[in-house]
Length: 94
Image 1 (cartoon, rainbow, N blue to C red):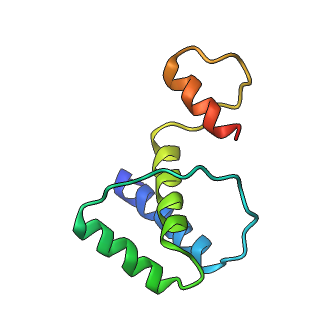
Image 2: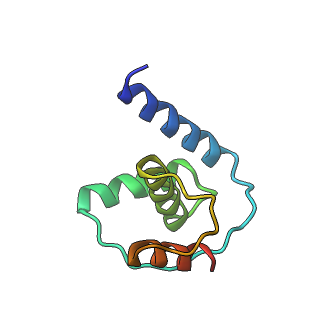
């Protein structure tokens, strides 16, 4: 299976998750995000396709999936080794 196929499968799983709206709430952090107009329109289109979800939740899920793709969350509870890890640890513990 090629890289493109793997990404498509992960996005399909995300779409399936959005179709089953009832999920347990997780702690969230509010961040401001600037998107290109075209990308914002695409996000709003997804929100229209999945009326049980808000734009913020869709963006959060997309970012979460992208971050998981880039680097899985560490399972270790060891002390952070760098400022980046420290920041990530701070937000995941909120």
